[in-house]
Length: 97
Image 1 (cartoon, rainbow, N blue to C red):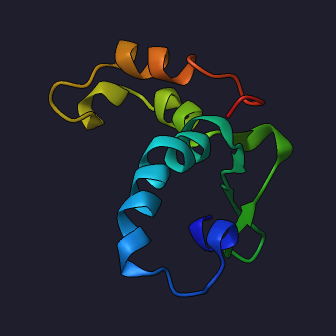
Image 2 (image 1 turned 30 degrees about the vertical axis):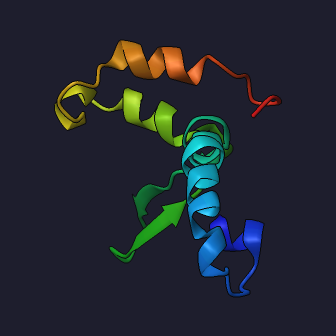
């Protein structure tokens, strides 16, 4: 995602902190909370080989996938709650992000 946004050119060192700050405040918010992506479903075919199927119904944001897990609280860092993440995700809608 970052290479698609910035390209493959060298970023000058004196601009690195600005790029990092923008990534942390804007890009990661968009990617994790507002940009949908496919999550595969593993299906075993007649020969016993595993195949990945990407159904439209399995498309969701990484945050939506995270909260759909059983007991997602166990994966959170200390001091972070699901209520905080929900509030953070609702500060902007998808179009604003």
